[in-house]
Amino acid sequence: MRDSFQNIFKIPELRKRLIFTFALLTVYRIGTHVPTPGVDGALLASFFEQQQANILAFFDMFSGGALSRFSVFALGIMPYISASIIIELLTVVVPHLEQLKKEGEAGRKRITQYTRYGTIMLCIVQSFGISVGLEQFSVAGSAVVPNPGWGFRLMSMITLTTGTALIMWIGEQITERGIGNGISLIIFAGIVARLPSAVASTSTMASEGILSPMLIVALITMMLAVIGIIVFFESGQRRIPIQYAKRVVGRRMYGGASTHLPLKVNTSGVIPPIFASSVLLFPASILQFSNSQWLQSISGILAPATWFYTLVTVGLIFFFCYFYTAIIFNPVEVADNFKRYGGFVPGIRPGRRTAEHIDRLLTRLTFAGAIYLSAIVILPDYMRAYLNVPFYFGGTGLLIVVGVAMDTISQVESHLVMRHYEGFMRKGRVKGRR
Figure 1 (cartoon, rainbow, N blue to C red):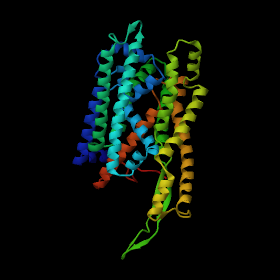
Figure 2: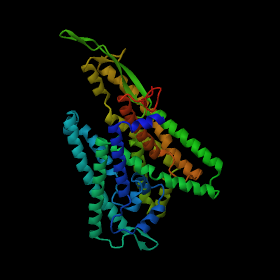
Figure 3: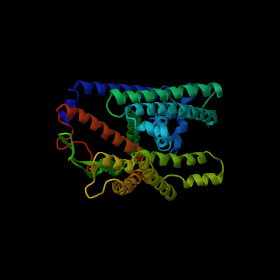
Figure 4: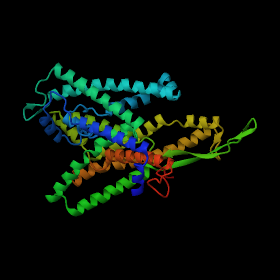
């Protein structure tokens, strides 16, 4: 492992890519501390300290704390992710977008441009809503926005929209000229940046006797176990064998090769937990600010670590797992491509039978993946409720951190192996597990 890290800096191109990636991530982290004009930062910080397990805390996690500071990067990269998902869904119902998706690199560039336009539109709407909402907030009788009005709203809209556009550009530059997926690394950096304060808070609670040494050891052991489970499932695959028939073209023979179609256990990634948490936390957050007693009681039912919250969360995760998998993976199209190029699954007839076989296997894998995601997402809520864990253990944040780390390590290892260096694992490679 030590030799592998040393080899990274022996490759000039890989060394430049890593330095470029770290430099842009540093720029992003600096931007999360640059405040937007017109907001009392101290009052806003105290307001966010009172908001736990609601939609504000959820989005503040993805922005790396930029939302609680209302910095120029307060919206984070979430508008870009939302626009990407919307465009992805529209490719199924809009023939023009579906055709662009099949046109290769040129079509991908057009879809990327549409995603950028959608991101700007979402930023304008969200920044306006946030600025209007902040004008209504007050802490101990003091307004968070001292001088509300259209001047503050326009300034916030311009600042926050420009900030998200800059984050979007940083992510694209990292993907093109750095190492790893830029958008994922930005989210990764925002979540990991909260780790030191969480560790410090845990140490303080341990020194004060709130957390016993045995409990801390148990938490560390459980965290390592959860990370291992995430790695196990994220790298898990069901490989469908594919055989290509031999064919003669002129005097040359083609085909006859054997390969496989990898189906991931968690095909939908972290999209189901993000969507499920957003859908469930949004009404709970709205009800929390209401003065009505019966609305407050409904908000209590939707609180984390309750049976109703758990049941609804699991149901939403299952729904979004199947829904998003159906959007991004089309068994009929895959079967038709195999048939067009002379490929077939041994023992299965090409065409419709192959599509049904792939769909049946994918359905079973998605069910297992949904159970795994539900367990990882629900775990931190019960640990915070019953064990008083002071930091966001497990859940969507840990899924993103581990997944992005695995993807980045795989890309670094590809550069090492391509140049005849040892990778991070001497016996095998960082790849999918059968």
